[in-house]
Amino acid sequence: MDPVIASAIFLFGLTFGSFLNVCIYRLPLGLSVVTPRSACPNCKQAIAFYDNIPVLSWLILRGRCRHCQTPISPRYLLIELLTGALFVACYSYFGLTLATLKYCTLSFLLLGLIFTDAETKLLPDKMTLPGLALGVAFSLITPVNDLAAQFLPGMINLPFSGDISARLLSLVDALLGAAVGASFIYGAGAIYLRWRGSEGMGFGDVKLMAMVGAFLGVKLTVFTIFTASLAGSFFGVGTVLVVWVKRTHRFMKRLAAQAARRRAWQSAQVVYRNYQMPFGVFLGSMAMVAFFFGDRLLHWYGRLW
Image 1 (cartoon, rainbow, N blue to C red):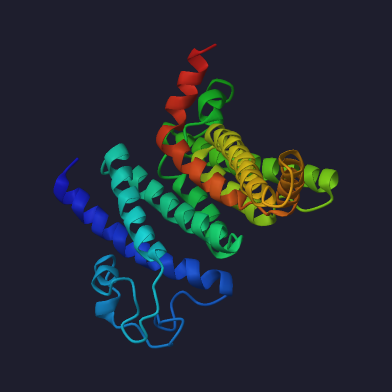
Image 2: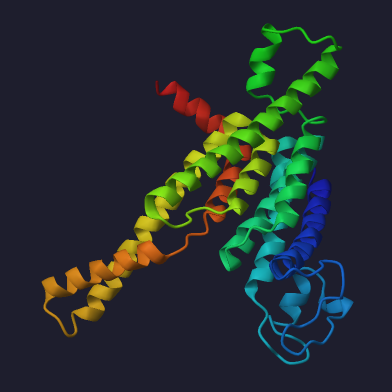
């Protein structure tokens, strides 16, 4: 990895991270990400260009607005650094290739969707739908070497040159990945709605997985859904246990130990039933794991059998 190129990519990522913060704040509100200029949400003063330098401005201002001293969330700093780090990680893993551009794009979109879902429980169409189109477009220039590319060449002969056939098969893989990802989440949501009588997953999750499928293909899309389900389950169980322990301590101040534990468990179950888990956070996080480590993990898992 060339340190000069890596540094340039990191700075490039910081800039995109700064723009991503604008997207995360404005898109759920239905606002343009282009106009007007960035301003403090509290005092409405426009932010000068020298106060809008990624990372550096936040540190110089010590996380506060220059005019009204309202705290600026550390999330702005974190997202800028994460975007830069992910861009460098893509360059380190894929080299100076079009694949790096592809996965930097996917990282940018996933990071924005993860934080938007965590904060607002929304997955904006203005990120998922353009992401889906970009994933399909990228499949024509960087191969999605998945099921169609692996099995169809031996079954059918396309009347095109080898390069064109490979690109078409890559496109088929992207479309299959999008269809499988969207269908799986839509089906799971429909089953949950019929079983529990409430919506478990919205159409935002469906569109997110269609986007992920277009970038990654069928195999890594299934990997993403499976690992995200495991991560979400562990998070849900952990949340219930934390609530139970905390409320047990609270109820023990006025109830006997056994009664306090029973009352706390009932309370934790209510939290579990009513809490809306931002599943997009887990889908997006596991999609990142998938394009960096998914093939290795699947290969390791396959060797166990």
